[in-house]
Length: 108
Image (cartoon, rainbow, N blue to C red; front, side, top):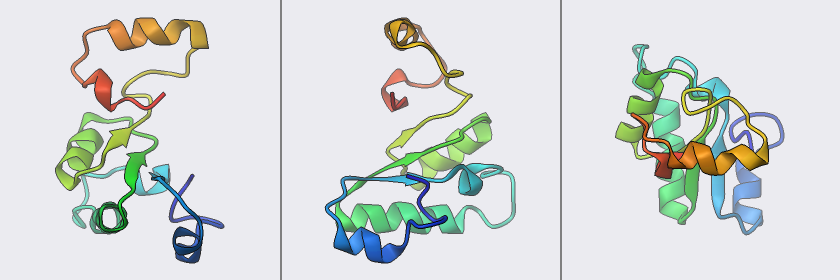
């Protein structure tokens, strides 16, 4: 969780049997609107792919962020662009709704 910040050191990626890297919202915010083109996020996604784990980007709020993440090859996303937090009994309804973003890319 929150890969790239705090205690989420690369040494832990080697040491523990992980199956998913969750990219912190700090790297997602503004992605697709700045000049760097998401080089750091691209490196995280590439690293995950090379070691055989999935990626989920958190904090997606803008469609430009989603488009950039899709172009970089991120596997999953979560954030207010998809939905505000919901009670568990409303999740089925969210996933059944037609949406401009694919429900299959929403991590619940």
